[in-house]
Length: 198
Length: 46
Image 1 (tube, rainbow over the protein chains, first blue to last red):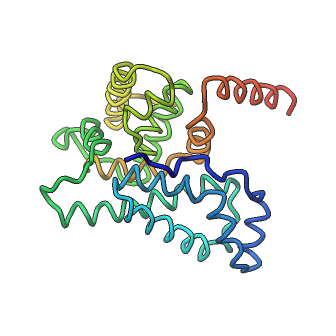
Image 2: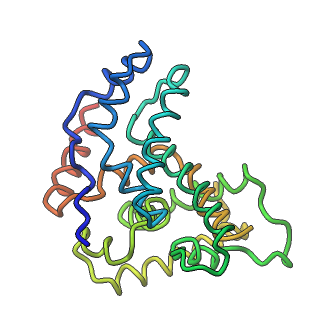
């Protein structure tokens, strides 16, 4: 079925600073304006992760609630990035629950399954803790050329399908698949601590 | 650690990387060139 809610729809709404000011004033118009401007994008992100329209709608709504609770005290520098991170977190939590409930079911988990290849062998040493993992990931991302980094993030942060990335970038699916494979190998080296970062 | 843990940990990617991805995602080749030119201009003047 044709997906009618596309990223970019409605992003010409109120200026972000004004929306954040509404949150700080505890005006419920903040939610309406956020939804108007970023609703389609947040829904799309949740749908990419969850592969389910109803769950994606609930995650979108939960994002507004979370933003309402966290702004103030937060004052995001980039509202879109801030909201996207909330949506992604909520979507992953929901996905984990679904995965636990439907063990062996047909939940599509491809981006995360691909990342299994990057996990260092546990027999070779300790696994990185959360802080190390964050540093490894950021150092890995900073070593990638911009085009490659965006490709990696589109697949493993935004959970776009390879077909969708190919459509958006105008590149062949094979090109996307090969580059993602090479980047996963590189990420594995980072996680194994084999790449020295200055 | 699992692939899901790693996928989840990617949420700690620096905001600049996320913002960069969001800026370029869904744009046509022409729009990407326009954004690049604009960012180069900003970098040069600011």
